[in-house]
Length: 223
Image 1 (cartoon, rainbow, N blue to C red):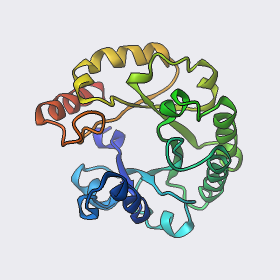
Image 2 (image 1 turned 90 degrees about the horizontal axis):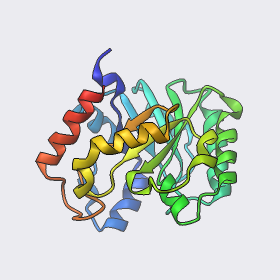
Image 3 (image 1 turned 135 degrees about the horizontal axis):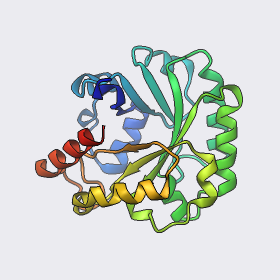
Image 4 (image 1 turned 135 degrees about the vertical axis):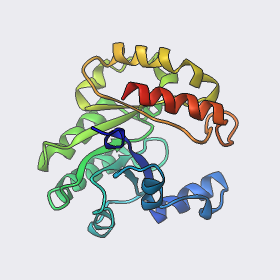
């Protein structure tokens, strides 16, 4: 199986691009479409972000991808607990008409726990709502290595896949250590490793090429 079968890009709807460009004071032209990203990185899988409900028209535009995962919540910025659960329920129903939808993702999951905005009940409700109409769907949770000190044990039954990210660029050289820790913390869950091109956590600049090469070469080794 080729590495591209396991590679995903994160793509944004036009509405999400407008939201992020305002938040980061950046030009909308700096953002690529999901199709452009997929062609650049030679993959047919996309994690798709939209600030509202995922309507049929949006999902139809993603019909050319093999696998699609959609966001159902961002506890730091977008949705409250009720909204997250409702969005997950709607996506589960829609997935019956769009077989390339394979799951949903809760962005900034560990940050939400850190700030007290992501309760176990919220995650349990999201998990149940997503799978009510389509039990085959997987729920992904974004976990940052800087939050490995959190007790995630009560949450473990309510997500299927660890979407792992190193937030600070100065921590990227410790990737091997983080992966070893993640395997111990989540022994029964698949781990998807996030690869940054931009340093959101420290410099707010493009990641230095030596760090990009380091993390991508390590990712190829894991595959």
